[in-house]
Amino acid sequence: TCILDVLRHVPRCAFSDKQNSVIHWALMAMGVKDVPSERSMKDIQKVLQKMCGVQSLRFSGALGHIYYSNDLAAIVAQEISNPQVRPHLRFLPEDSGNRLSEAWQAQRWLHELDSSLTTPMIRTGGQDFYIYEPVLLHDGQVCMPHRWFTRGEEVLARTWAMSPSRDGGGWIVHEDHDGEVRESQLHLSLPHLIKAYAYRGLPDPRCIVGVLSGAAADSTDRMQEWTWTNPAVGNQWRSKAGGHHVVAFPIWLYCDDTSGNQSKKWNKHNSFLFTAAGLPRRFVHREFNIHFLATSNIAPPLEMLDGIVDQLKDCQESGIWAFDCVLKEWVVIIPSVLAMLGDNPMQSEMACHIGLMGKLFCRVCWVSGNPEEPNGNDQNARGDHDGDASDSSIHSAMSHDGDGSPDSPKSTSKVACRSKKNESMAEMKERIKQFMSIGFLRSRQETTSYLKSQLDMALRVGGFTAVKVARTATGIKDTFLAFFLDKLFKISKKRGKSKEKKQSELAQAATHLPPLMRMMSPVWRIQDLDPHADTPVEILHVILLGFVKYFSRDAMARLKDDQKRILIARLTSIDISGLGISPLAGATLVNYAGSLTG
Image (cartoon, rainbow, N blue to C red; front, top):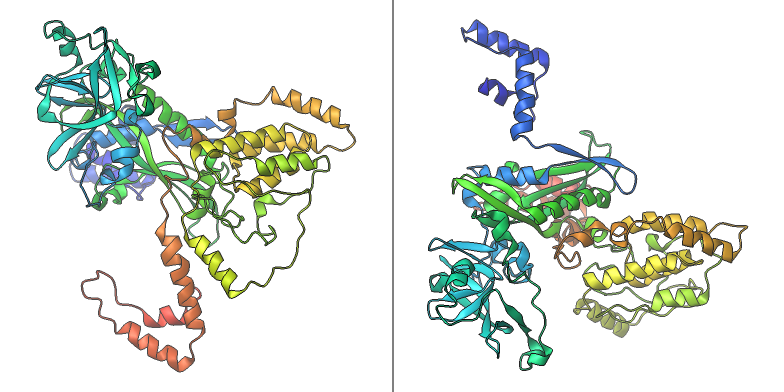
């Protein structure tokens, strides 16, 4: 029965009922006893699928589409139970100095990721030490760990200093006094410290008076409230885990559009997949380590992401229980998104960016194209003029400025399309110099502020043109929010109604809209993810299939036939020893340079 079940689930080798019947007949012909019937095998499959399989969850999307997603929690739990995967997983970031080869050695996991999404505890000396809980060191000092990490073979904690309050009734946390503590220095965890603090003449560790940091470090009058935990209870994961290990599981979340056809006819399907960031790179791209979540040729990416984020939030709230095949016990897992991967157009959509054809073509910073050029190439800024838009509303849309961003360009009510001015050599050099310099970086808070302002514009008569101009001026467009804005635009663009009547209908429509965070892209609901910074550049399309490919095409187009023959011979004769690649097909690379896609 076990072998038959394995045969029925071999990837890319699905057997029909008739083929399964032939296999059963062959087994019986060879004298195998108690061969189960086809019906029995299907009943067993249903039971095993419910017990051990990954369920497909049905979602009714906010944009009106039905789609399905695999159970994120079940996939993660299977990774922890998989003896081929679990021994290679890393749950703590590493301080590797100048060496960087794995995800857990990078700044994102080591310093930037919210501590609440990192592994919150370590077990040593029979005690569980949690972050955001006071601990007593062997030298008698009390400190507050806020992140665990490794350095070589040793586990360390980043800590904040703690000192008794003036009246001795509690503790003050000094966030500006950051230090490191080795695992071997830990003496008493919070439960043991609660029992021993009176004997040692220390204040109650459950009483945290407040936090001092930065300018307030020398003044108790400017003390801030401790908000990381309920100090009387400690870290929430201690009670949720009930004595079990708790580990972090950051993932690389990937989205791309692929064709659903085996033929060359394009049939666009948007798909979400993920890999474990804690796996070494030599393992992470193996087929069984790439996990499928959802796909659809109808639902757009952000609508599917909405359901995936709902799963992620639930998992982060309650944790994922899984059997650890290495520790031989049940553990609790906290998943998080380390970064989102994809090509440039997909990452622009995830970052609510207008795209590469916009004047502000970068999703990371505020670099701009030639300001004298018309915006005709910005397809996201096109549209019919809203006759009710006033000059003041357009000016307001263009001059809105978020924190830390450069001032947006000013606007008039009409943008004149004029021919491109011939620039001098000095002007070209200056333009290239500005383009190559580091610009003002975009931020999560800033972009959500702009999106909120776009909604406010859409709720006023004349909002269509105001939003269109704002998108061009800021390079920010949320395709998820656009679904709801379009409903408002239909009201404000109606003909034959007075401005007052339209405004009244807009106010009525606003009462039926979902909450703001449910109208904006679900990427903003992913905890501690900034899509402007946490969408790594995909070098395949930017470099290899970018300027390298186009440089090659241009070079081949300029060669004469006799020169091409020489180049073919040179490419074919290149010694590829030690490169691990096949010999170069010189004739193909030269004669079909304009048709190469990979």
